[in-house]
Length: 175
Image (cartoon, rainbow, N blue to C red; front, side):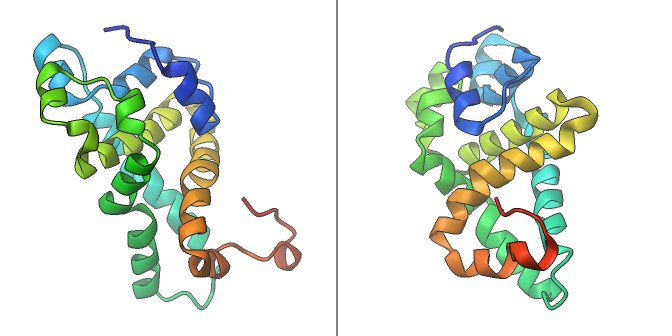
């Protein structure tokens, strides 16, 4: 299964160029395609990406002393829940543009399914993590912050004010 059509455009969109193009194809492959044609789908990468997303978000929250765990969970839910990621992907038309689907998946319009789209976004993050080797976390964090969180902060500016550290306070740059 080598369908590299769309890889370059997706790489440009997320701001990361894959060394291993096959892992990007795997991230793009919906289960309907693999059921009909064989090969791997994006489910394992989605599980990995979900964990990486959680790590990136919780890492962002670590230095905020007055952020209580309950509020932390609510903010995480707002930014990277299946619903939030699915809507993010739907707004950007990621499923239509990049998801490799089988005939059945296309007929059932899985490219519009919130769950399928959320898994696709998570799979992309998992693929970045795997592709980057030892630098996987740093690269995945860059993609999450510049691609997903940047968009989510525009929708929820109050959350950005809460979790994006002040440049002057700690000498770090904001995403």
